Amino acid sequence: METELFKWLDKYSIDIEEIDNQHNTLLSIMNHLYTAFMKKRVSEEIDEILQRLHDYAKYHFNTEEKYFKKFGYEKASEHKKLHDTFLEKIADMKTDIEILDTSVIYRIMSFLRNWLTNHIQIEDKKYVECFKKHGVE
Image 1 (tube, rainbow, N blue to C red):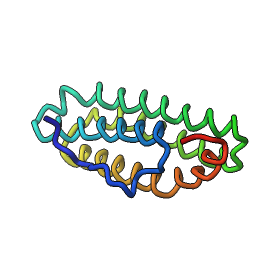
Image 2 (image 1 turned 30 degrees about the vertical axis):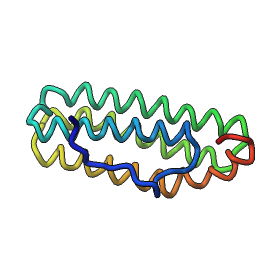
Image 3 (image 1 turned 45 degrees about the horizontal axis):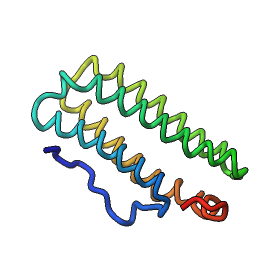
């Protein structure tokens, strides 16, 4: 059973099933990191967890960006920059873990929780009207 760092709350839903499901998968990966940390397995699992997070985030971002392009979303390039920055940060974390101590893990988990919460609640909600106008439910 996974220990949850981050619980899904209704306020995080953007009311688009495909995107909400992907956000839930990202949360699951973050919770896997937290579980590994709490069970003192993080040193064995962090590389794989960060790689999964990077790969799934890229998949998720591609989903959003596909819709941006298809619908001509006006803030697409601004939003894509946020995605690129996130992926770069994950890549940086992979190098940070060479010195794997508690403070590094706390920084990683805090960054992930704050980034995803803010990204969903602020940035992703900006495109909802555009997506719904084009029939994405």
